[in-house]
Image 1 (cartoon, rainbow, N blue to C red):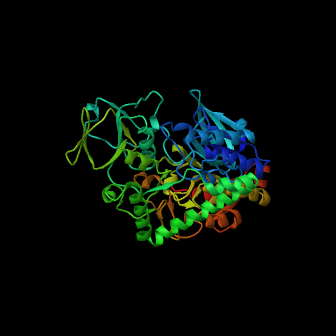
Image 2: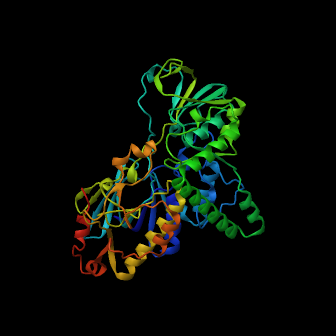
Image 3: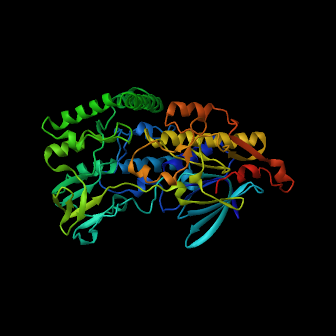
Length: 502
């Protein structure tokens, strides 16, 4: 069986970042990236719907080591995909990727201090082994998004599509379109489709906070004209991180004030006569769910132009011509887009076994938001909910490299986060009221009330913990001395592995 020091699962933005960090900080480690699909890029290759773009600025969504030099801070999907490809080529990471390798099962052996990973490839099951398993496969199901059960769907004579299944063959030019949803995907689709459709209606059950932001960062572009690209990028990155943290903390401490400012900005875009109370005033406070970003106010522009509109109501049923709403109103449509969210899939649905015992990561405690209590030598990349994904991914990659180097220094082959029952009060992994999060509460691990089990969603705190915090903190147990392998292998460190919750 082929063996690697580190096996990375997923060749999206996290997986490519993992490859860079391993090459820079652990150059002696042999690694491979297994990608289930036939292309790199993850989200930015999978999603092809009109207007696909980042929902945060590229100075924080981009890698810390790779300056974003495009003039647009809010970038479209193809530009982001090019950036990921360019990063992989520049550092030779693309040569480490094996496509069409779908990881299904991983079995840990304390005796051997390694994972045996079962992979589907070309209709066959293959096995590889690794000393450390790094899951960079994202957090949602790539096979299908979330679509509620709607009554009468089979009666609809038009076309029905979820954005995750969008293809180039879908033609909406001159057609009546209804987009169901009010999240980031919906507010991206509506103004883009409104350019060519007869009319686009965004049908929402309840409103979302929507904030307009310039698509270009003038400060960043000015800095780049007078400073080296890396310096300008670093300054802009920290500027945006600190502004984001300030706004988030203000929203948590003074939600009414932030809510008022957001709604005042919407009124200034749409005028005093627009029913902002109905269509743009959520029932929750800002940042109880992720805010929706619209570059250059494109959604508001299409609403003012009359090429799009918003209806706030619930669906009674589908009809042959479109939708009948609970209010009795009917919406005719040629195309209905169900921008109703994602389905969370922890670790890409990986089946985990530790020393012959099946393990359910969803019943574990999250260590630093990246590892799982009782599961040895396994980490996953999971980004921030209140900031850019890559900020946390970069920190996670760096921490994994610290762990690997530390184990080499102390001569240990196994690291396992261990939580003592009853000593760590449990709470949901994500403190978010969004539908996709609430639907998946039972599929996610729990977090604790204090370090290292607390998920802070705070980049500054995480920098201190991930880059400078003690590796031997009492919760992370190092075991399985290398000398045991040299003697032919005693089973050492079973206590930590056996702590995995079945």
